[in-house]
Image 1 (cartoon, one colour):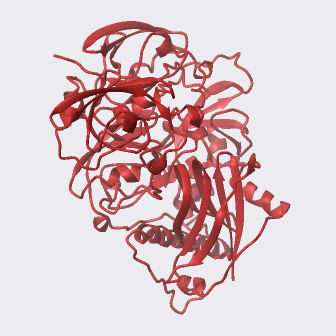
Image 2: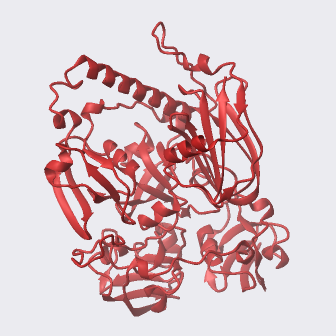
Image 3: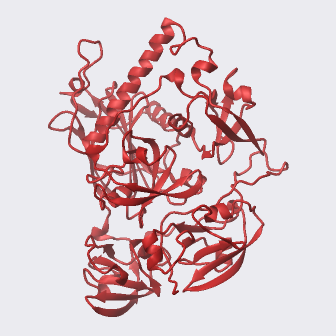
Length: 620
């Protein structure tokens, strides 16, 4: 059997594990660690790619990146190595690399067997703490190598030959003589199976490096050598702006978005370009196949998300009824979920939201964090948290295996668990890890209410108001799902005292405030829980106009810098109603935003490259 190297991904399993014992002499505010750190990024292989590479076992760990100065690097591991054993135990579907390392702590030495060029090799690795391995250095734009190719949208060709590409004028591949529809077979001796492989190789290159391409033009096999150019000016290679993880062809039925780089790192994920699921739509593909809130989706089949490929772009390749493998991280472990795709019109949005009294209630308040990982809390007197033994300024790190990074993560648990379900809470207290076992308790049970509305007319009014708020949120989510189909909904509450949402937003003039005063800036930052940015983002041509049907407002602006863009819209009361991120953005931004809120003032927060601009918009 001839073995070749295997596939890439921008996804990293940092290979963290919880230590079974934390030293009693740990610092008072320790850095949280999951245990031994190997220092590699890996990619799960599809069965077809594993066969193409000659691998009999598709469940090994295929390295797409090795941290400089990490245990893996010191042991001589490199990209496209394929780890097959740890301490003589073969990796398999139920025993992945993260599982194999889960029993080892920083300082432990382990033996790893891997494949390189079809030959089985062995090496010994001494694991370290994550904090002991430096993050990869940021690469300046003028040092970032750019091959100057795009993946061809034409798929009807012999895939055993490599990856079919489109050539961008003026860049390295163009200078080397490549033409549109050439098929790249290998780069610097590494076999190319799919687009991820090209990305893996290029991530390891720098401007000025020599590069050797073997490629097919028709039936002729050619070789070309050259020097890599800079990616500072990518011309027409700028990715398209995609505002959701859906496509017009298929509909997964997930809500959420990208992780911040800090949250991704704290979860052991170095690639923040995937999709962090916060809720799942009923009767959708995601619901049918068991996707959950707090899952992290980073690939479909052999395609992986990255700075040059969003999840929406990947989904656009698929059709209804087509089978595919979804690649997820759940509770720190990589899993593969086979699904059959559906079109958007087959997904029925029929959600049931529980009354606030029926939802799980822990009885904690947010406190200022004192450690790098987890959520510091204070305890509500008499609540479930106090009864099971939690104390003020415990830092909750996990609940039932789910990482708790921020306050939102606690709310996502509402959709996963019900009162009576088992609950396992892991916390840090004074430098020591503690675990508490109990069951989820409802607000009704915790407060000993006699019925679901807590027994009084005042409380009943309060909970009715909460239910109407939930209904409003459901309608907004449904509107968000349908607007990609260019379908608008008119909601009429009849003769009730509730306003007609569509009528309210008709005929409103738009006023954009020139600047915010200090009080307003502090208010916005308190909503975002953030500090002032390092500079002011230069935003040109900012405008907000009602569209022809007066249902949505069209936002338009232009940015001449290149970098990761984040656009948030808050109501005057601090409710987040729009959150968009795009990697490597430059140029004109346009999108539709539903401003059917109870507020008449909104804050638009635009952030890029550490800079920020806040616009206040008043609708009259």
